[in-house]
Length: 182
Image 1 (cartoon, rainbow, N blue to C red):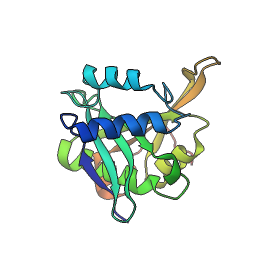
Image 2 (tube, rainbow, N blue to C red; image 1 turned 180 degrees about the vertical axis):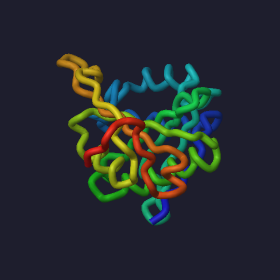
Image 3 (tube, one colour; image 1 turned 90 degrees about the vertical axis):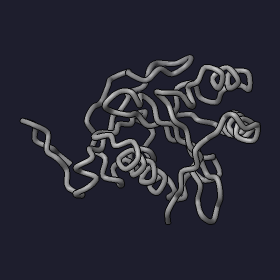
C-alpha cells in the first residue's frame, strides 16, 4: 500500500484551512506543543515553519482513504533533516504509519538527496517506536528527560535514524566501535 506525498501550499486558502483544521482538530499527545489553537496555527504559518528554506511540508495521501496525515521536514539546510509525522486520529492504529514513514524516507533520499534522516519521539510513544523499527530505522540515542511535557516532568526522548546506504542496501551500517543489541 503506497502513500503519496502532496506538497502543502500555504498560498492557497484550502491548504491553510486544511492545515489549521488538521492540527487543531486532532490530539497530538506525543508531540511538543500538543494540539495548537487556531491563533497559534496562524502564527506558525506566518512564521514560515511549514515552508521555507529549512522546512517543507506535505499531506500524506492514501490511494483509498485520501488524506490521512501530515509530515514536515525540518532542518533542510543541515546534513541531517528531521522528521515530524502526524496521522489523523481516526487513522491511527491501522498500520498506516509504516507506509507513511516509508514514503517520507524515500522522498528524503531520492528528492532531497540527504545521506542521513533522523526522527525523535517520546519514550512512551510505542506505536511510533515500532514504526521506526519496522521501517529499518535504528535507535541511536535515548535522552533522559529530554522531551518537555507541559505541566509535568519531562519525558525521555528517543532518537532514530536511517542512513541512505542502509535504505539503499537494506543492511544496517554498524556503529563504529559499538556492538548493537537488538
